[in-house]
Length: 379
Ligand code: GLY
Image (cartoon, rainbow, N blue to C red; front, side):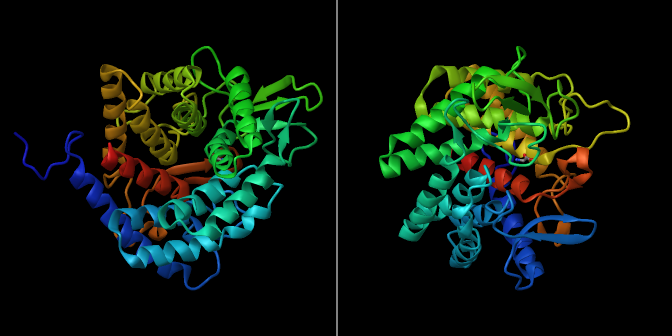
């Protein structure tokens, strides 16, 4: 019999507690490193802390992580910090030129609303949902992702955009306005129809004709190749359809979640430590960087998907998520005290094609890591 202190999938408490203690210690340092700037941390690159404002697509993750630390510890200092950083994102509710409002607002004000019931957070969320809905194209029945690249794409939709739909389904319930649900279901339906390949993997980007609504181009922007499987994109797809099944109970969404999970879990190039290469199809030489953020997203999604699965497959999902979380908790991926700019996880890849944020910490890797641990605690 193992000593009680050794964490296992059946008895994960010590791993969860240890990681939240590390998160608290690292983030106390990160708050000091921010040094009074009225901004939010995104990464630590080339020896420098990168701070951003509310317009950045990642602005919601640091406040979201602070809320998750508060939820675990119930210490008022984390609630104060979470409120402070959540308020810094509020102006994002007025943005109509970004499709990332789900990440920005639902990961920050969404947790604030859930954990404090504060009216001001609900108001920010509802204004943001209205802004996000303005990006819906009724012919393509999807939310437009990017405004840049207008010379190449007319109505580009990236797989990440699925992550907005939980927010819109929340808005439909809160406001009683059915259009938010119609938008979310339209987007989920079209993405299911056009983003996926036979093997269960997904394209990064599908461009639609905004007049006819017909898909005209399928390609990548952040992945290795148009036909490759960009690791974080597979994570967004898995997470997205797992969440959509929770919200709708539509079995087609569950089927895609299982297909995404199967693609990842059985992929011959998933490394021994289960932290994906930044793209499943990238050549082996030179040694490609990993993407810890993809692992964190996948682990969080698998813990939820296990709840909707038959016992044998649920166990496989939990085992993969557990192996990922154990790897991420090891010194190979988790920062030594006071290092890594104050972030928790090392070795994520933002956009290798642009040589941007390669093998660095990222605020969203930390966020989904803490979310996965929180889900494991509740499982
Ligand atoms: N949403 C952008 C990314 O996953 O890099």
